[in-house]
Image 1 (tube, helix red, strand yellow):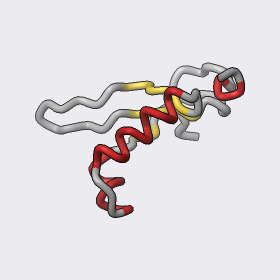
Image 2 (spheres, one colour; image 1 turned 45 degrees about the vertical axis):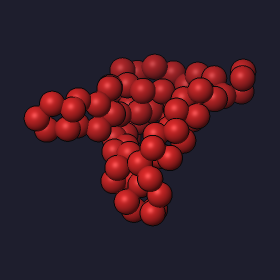
Image 3 (cartoon, one colour; image 1 turned 90 degrees about the horizontal axis):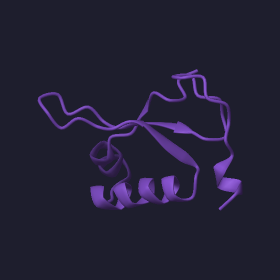
Image 4 (spheres, helix red, strand yellow; image 1 turned 30 degrees about the vertical axis):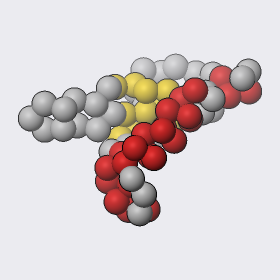
Length: 75
């Protein structure tokens, strides 16, 4: 129900699993490259530091109604 609004703050995830935040950023980039996720809103590093938001490509996007793309199957 929140596909398209999935916020993933790299620093918070890194702290939770005990790795460097750049490791999480590289993993997110790999997931985008292979078509498993798409970015729906870029993070904002202004005053409130909002995290980027993503959608899983195998599910319908709840943000804008896009149908599943399954782009990971084409790569």
